[in-house]
Image (cartoon, rainbow over all chains, first blue to last red; front, side):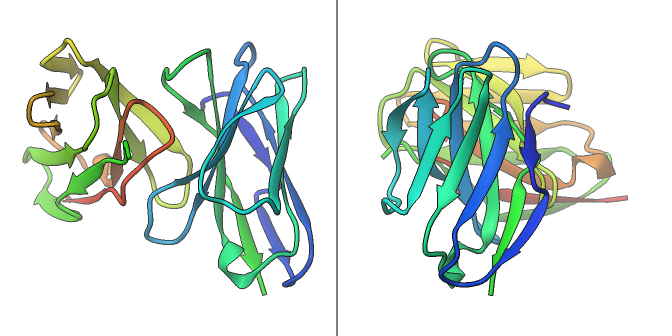
Length: 112
Length: 107
């Protein structure tokens, strides 16, 4: 157990809808990163938040957005869902800097 | 890009044998990390090696780092069925993962 939790575990949405995924970081970790992992692929970096500010972003469109809250929780929001958004979404928390990341178990999103 | 590329893509061995997987990267780094992922679950951090280290051990794991060749290797000794998983390297420690090495340990 890493102390990082994610909800929900599984989610089914329809194309065009919006979705919010939630993550609770390990206590004291002020950095959270979100990843998308398609089947058979490695995790792809979406963005990172540090002390509630976006601190880096991967090659994902603006319809992927996030929030980080003072209580170490965070959200990933995806608007206008597309079929290709179907994937495992992982969040990972860490202390300052590029130290080891603690991953949550992920949310499996299916878009139909 | 700091994305690592793991090799081989898939590896199948008998229980008790050693497993070696490799990682190559393209840019200078301060550290390199290895992670394990059991099927459909989150990644678990295994080991971090810094750029001024050539080798590091943790239990049955041995990691080497050759910054001149921009490569790293992960050795798992005396493998067990529970080691069956995908293994990813992360040059620079975060953000960019390759497609991983899928290890199957046959009991």
